[in-house]
Length: 290
Image (cartoon, rainbow, N blue to C red; front, side):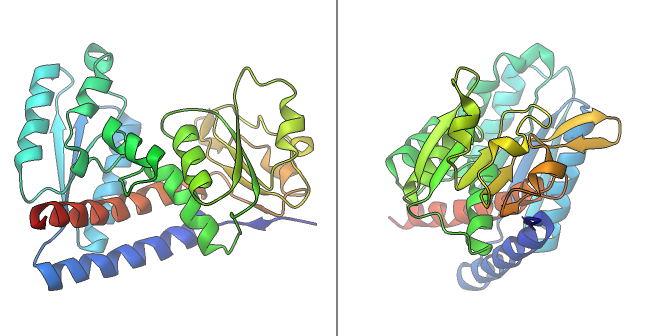
């Protein structure tokens, strides 16, 4: 039996369509055009591709998009000053600093990201937004895990009462995924490099999320027959070959539903970023009117 393929393209189109309607509503009802500023420092080719994708998607949905390109030699203070300027700009509702930063300022990444106004932090990385996610308050949450939840909903896959296992405990995927799944009443286990008898744990999962950045690490014998497998990994194993953290060819024979790589979770991330920009506008309107 072959698993149902959860196409990122199909779900991303649905998420973007819903974001587009919300953008139109904000324009008509409040006379506000959502604005996103993406800061890119240096010439990282992969980052340039990501930024172009974000810019193009904004244009499709009627969101104003400003790409702030800064040189490789930008200092920490120059970058912080640019963030302060965007924090104060009433036409910019979302701010995103494209990572990784150049080596000279990389060690200051946390301080730089924390400078973004939490109400404009569309990546959901600010400690204030992380705290709200943990305590279950409305917040801007990281786009990739939020996209995974949205996809499960759109695919009609039940979360409530299910056993979920996450492999990987990063701040960007693993930890927020834990809180989002718990908020939806799943029983969640987080595994990592120190987990003993990993395959025994993963075989109990109705929903298995692989997010550890190791090519084809999750093999078919680690998957409970019929489970939903969400592969967040994107690993380049040759100039033009991308694979996930799951051994897709074999896993597809065991799983009930599975995301491919490429063409899976990655496409949801940009779509959810657009939803976060809309959400940020709404939070800012609430704040202004409170």
